[in-house]
Length: 203
Image (cartoon, rainbow, N blue to C red; front, side):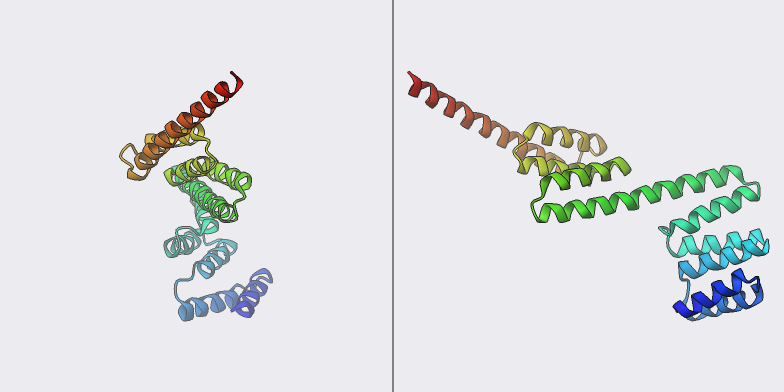
């Protein structure tokens, strides 16, 4: 497949659009609706100046994989060139949002790795990066669990409060909140007992 892609691009940039088109169409016929090939064909028709056909292939790429961001951006550019400015702006915003969601997921996945090896500082940083890209209740709750693990109950409860603003009926958030409040109460009670014992020892 890589050789076919190299041949396609060589023909494309040599200006042999007929050969490039044949290579691309054969690959799509053999492989099905692969977003990378559909996107390549969109670029081909863009270079040929056939904007409607270019848009059709970019749209097919997005339909094949809604997370294929490059095709989404390409479609928005073509829509703008065709004068459909509102739709172009909407598609561009959607592409940016999806790009943010995908980047957030990568940071979240990295945080889970750091948590698995108990590297809490790095995990906290990755979770905060994920939240900066996309405000997911799952990310806030994972950060709350991290703080809970570190016995930083105030910070954990802050994250849970934010999570509950996103979904007030979240069973996971409400359960974690109760667990956190109980642990905080027990922690403070034990701390007070230690202080009493220390004071008696001084007397």
